[in-house]
Length: 292
Image (cartoon, rainbow, N blue to C red; front, side, top):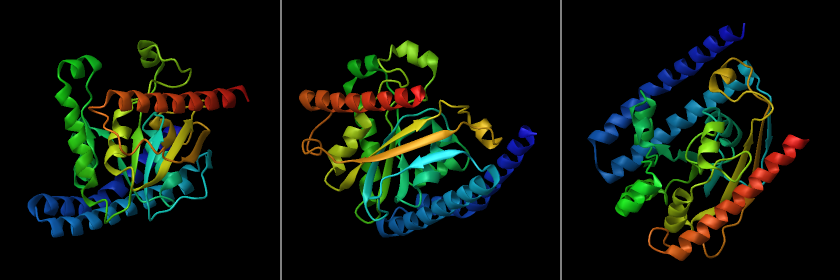
């Protein structure tokens, strides 16, 4: 009767979203209608509280209804009063649920880099806009080569995120691969990693350039689904994988906050080499857990 459990889970998730969606949409529309900075700051605080309640309620029914088999390993030095950058690999929509479950009580409110097309998702799209999630356009390497100025669209999205950062601690989440892992994508990319796609450095580099000195550190998250199913529907049915989330805190290298990723070729190559090395470590970690 796993399908019945899945239907009940959808009802719980939808009900929770609709319940908190009422104040969220109300505050979002006020934010759209009242473009005054003091009012916008006040509304953003209210939106953060509503979003926090949505996450907390989701975590409650997941814990007591789904009772997932998740193994979570976190560092002891996290704080809700500081700014953080979280970098993670990406397998499915379940990633977001697992990360919010594991980190919500340990880190400040999340901001995810999301695809711009997701703004059309009912309720959530409006919420992501109002909460000032950076909405990124996905350009191919050939497009950027022909029209380099396109990269500045994402830069402006990141800059908007930082408008209120001095007043409200945030956690910026970035799935550096830019898309969910599949074997087809892995083969198409000719990825050098066994369990991962190639990482993109641009989003992380933009955050570092504009707020690296304000960050307390980088949280490197590795999600391991390889002992079962990773689809979101399987999670809702209570038959998801035995998921392991391993997080470690990394210090920010001294060279990283003061670079110019868009215009400095040496810095861009150095940043890409750094994230490639990080991905190599992730891949080795996943290979070791596979062997065990």
